[in-house]
Length: 159
Picture 1 (cartoon, rainbow, N blue to C red):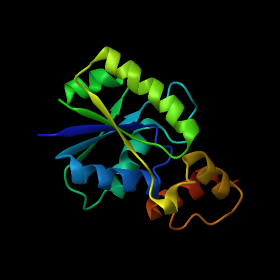
Picture 2 (picture 1 turned 30 degrees about the vertical axis):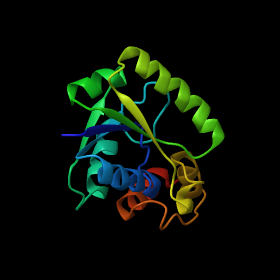
Picture 3 (picture 1 turned 90 degrees about the horizontal axis):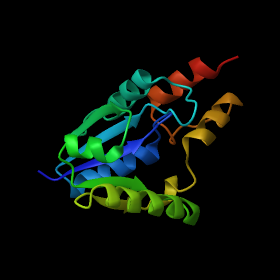
């Protein structure tokens, strides 16, 4: 079974993230969404909320599992017998950082490849930080995040 790991903090999950999962699933038998604890940055949503939200947004998508993780990504990939790490790249600046990570992951385990996905054009500008800021300021993010995300963000960010 060809398995890929799609890691991120997903604070919150966006339509761009879901687009990558669906597209990766076309190439892989199974995609494991690895929601990072987020020790390197403060998150609005706790780990359980982010995992639950991603699961709810995947309703109807087969062959996808959502797990939490804290530690080396290659260790998680080995645990799930993944042959690839799935990453999204929006801009050249993303590529530089992702390229460094891919090389380090290859050094740690040469059997695990990295698959880079370009975003669909309609999501190329999208990121979770911008989504939270727009909601915080009262803007409409319909079509950029699934409905369960909108409801939760409004609840969390209302002042």
